[in-house]
Amino acid sequence: MTFDLVAQDPQTKARAGVVHTAHGSIQTPIFMPVGTAGSVKAVHQRELKEDIKAQIILGNTYHLYLRPGLDVLRQAGGLHKFNGWDRPILTDSGGYQVYSLSKTRKIKEDGVKFRSHIDGSQHLFSPEGVMDIQRVIGADIIMAFDECTPWPCEYSYASRSLDMTHRWLQRCIARFDSTEGLYGYQQTLFPIVQGSTFKDLRVRSAEFIAAQGREGNAIGGLSVGEPAELMYEMTEIVCDILPQDKPRYLMGVGTPANILENIALGVDMFDCVLPTRNARNGMLFTTQGIINIKNKKWADDFSPVDAQLGGYASTFYSKAYLRHLFQASEYLAGMIASVHNLTFYLWLVGEARQQIMAGTFREWKERMVKQVMVRL
Image 1: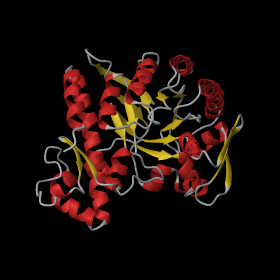
Image 2: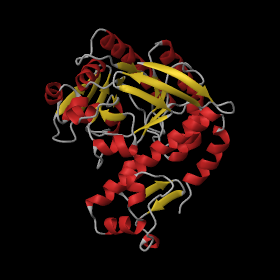
Image 3: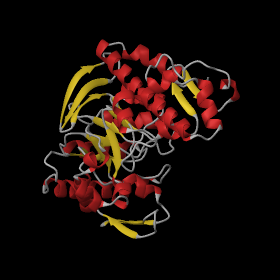
Image 4: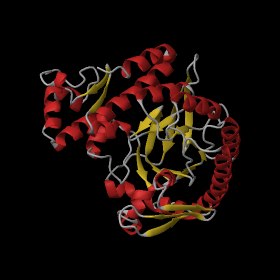
């Protein structure tokens, strides 16, 4: 994997670049739709490519390991062939999912023992094992195994956790560098910066991760409940340390405003379940602001969901019809809303890229942050 830095905004730290992988190139800044179990919920692959214009999607190690399992994925020839997605894929290491299973897991130096949320069976995720699992899944970009600390947490806990995450990273690197991809193309390992919301820990972690010299780096442990201002503060500290010539991926973020503010701080890659999860609950992100399509005010509004956005789902269906589908509990409601919200997210980062290239990002960002978060 290689990264070309194409442009930098003169008034902020925003960048435009291109990530080159075995399955194609990714123009940054980019938002990556989350396909947890090998599928972006309620969205066809064809819609992802042609309507949403996704350039890369995510899979999740924890979920894919449990179901369909490694045997099926290996027989299929990896996740790309299994789900029919021929563009880049990134896999999360499962560290966040293990973090969220706080009642059924035990964290030790060897790794994490946890019980499956499906059948209660017991499993161990070690740094080496997670590298092997991600080799079988076959994503272009794979993540190191880390511990995601909760917020808030004690300084002493965050510090001990950070040290263990760094030791785990060295084990991940050793295993990754001593093995080969299974399907005839190169994979890339991203380390993850941790440190909760403690400035000195974030600095220590960012310096350690930067020293590993990998092709890209990630920032984890944010967007776990902390105030947005703290997220931005930690992100800025870390981005100022991580190498300029490598892509920076902020994990699990976030709202449209979060994404725009973090682009301004130097982040290149984002993912979040928010656009699809909120879509299934009737919350639409639009170029004019946020719509709760279930509200009665949309019952006789026959204008398109978002005429300015373009795209099939956003312009073919009316607000009144989409509201009706939600009221009738039709599956199509979540499908239309999911395609729309993801189309909006990809449009937003695409517009940000154009503004960075033109040197006009700052003024545009200040206006858009307010506009896209207005409740309509």
